[in-house]
Length: 181
Image (cartoon, rainbow, N blue to C red; front, side):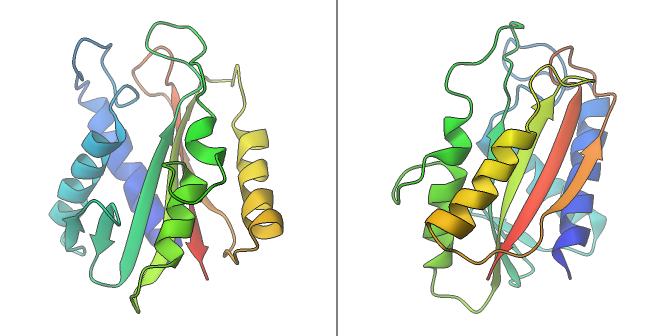
């Protein structure tokens, strides 16, 4: 199974869950306000329902897929449920020191896992339609820091976009994945 298939299935799962207008805590309906642990659980359960995956959620990595892939997830959203720009939202992706909880920190942690399984980091990002704050500069910065500063080898970016989500601030979900080589 290749990463592009996994990312496509994750994006489809998120879009389907969003269409059910589920509510997390006291937030507005839609997938956008759900936190990383809740999203990973939803993704795991729904990928299992597809019949081609056998998943297991853990603390490290977040998800084991068919004993073939180790996946770490990160969620970023420039805007909160309250229509305000979220403070420090980009730190979830770019903090570049081992031992932290950013996507870069997750990549460092994942690459050190003693396993023959393939490893990848998955980003779930939300934007408006059209974007009020584009995720593109952050995504390119992430790739540059990983490859040029930390000098990790990554495969090509894989991305799936789903539009017309139900939440007024999280209207588009971008699912991106990078294999760690």
